[in-house]
Amino acid sequence: MDELLAGLKAIAETTRIRILFILSHGELNVSELTYILGQSQPRVSRHLKLMAEAGLLSRNKEGNWVLFRLRSEGLSGALARALVEMLPGRDAVLSGDLARLEEVRRQREEKAQAYFSANAEHWSSLRSLHVDEASVERAMGDLFTTKSIDTLVDLGTGTGRVLELFGPRAQTLYGIDSSREMLAIARANLEKHGFRHAQLRQADIFALPLADNMADLVTIHQVLHFLDEPQRALLEARRILKPDGKLLVVDFAPHELDELREQHAHRRLGISAEQMTAWLSRANLQLARHIVLDPPWLKSRKGLTVSLWLAEPRNHARQATPVRKETVQ
Image (cartoon, rainbow, N blue to C red; front, top):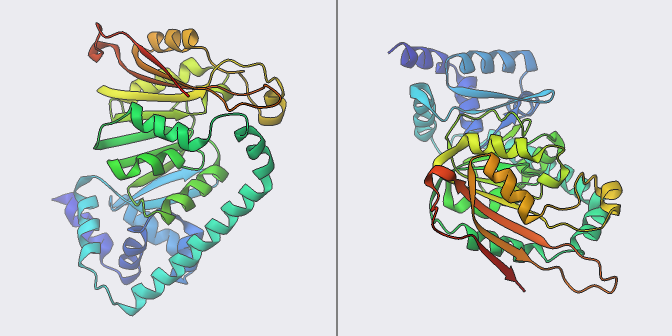
């Protein structure tokens, strides 16, 4: 009763209703909300503070930014969502807010494209060394065939591509990355595809801001070779995984392209099946399937083999089933 009353009191103001409507379309920081609302930053900040304290909004820090979104749980969160659904669709003020929101999104996309353009040469040279991404994504879909996912967590989400790939199947999406610049790109990409059920967080992959046993699927796509301690990342992935959940890892097999250390900041020159199996075992996970994608033929005879591993908690693993290693041409 107290939570409901606090939420009702916090909503009773025109600007706050506008904020609820705007945030129902995705996460925004204070500066973006200030632009959309056409009000001073101190005033907007005060509204946000009161609404967050009443449980209507979730507040997440991302570097120097603080991002707000409608709260997804609790009585106050339900109240916020219910109120948004009752708002008139043709209200002139809300229509103006929505138009300015689209301008904010356009600016985000322009910044994302500028970043891609500046780094395209490096990424193109790396992509030319391994099988095309479409083949990798098909293999990921073949490994994890469950039609409906309650909660997906993508670690080191980068541009958010894995969230896009599995988004239509999932009820809730979490993308974790340490780079605010990459999260900005992911946010623009996900908004373009209408994935409002995605939440992006700037966080350390070794200390995730997520509860134990909350994820049905955890994905780690081309991340482990950047880490000094991949084992710690797998332990943290296991912590948030449900007892019957799945872990999907994509990375390079061992190679001798030492130039990737200098050009792309790779800490490890690939990961062997034996090393991955050992890491998974220490994290109380068991490997269920292993797919290998050979690189394209290159005149230099240099290429990168892509490995995909599907693992599950040991207590729920099918102990009698042998690991399936499959090479896809």
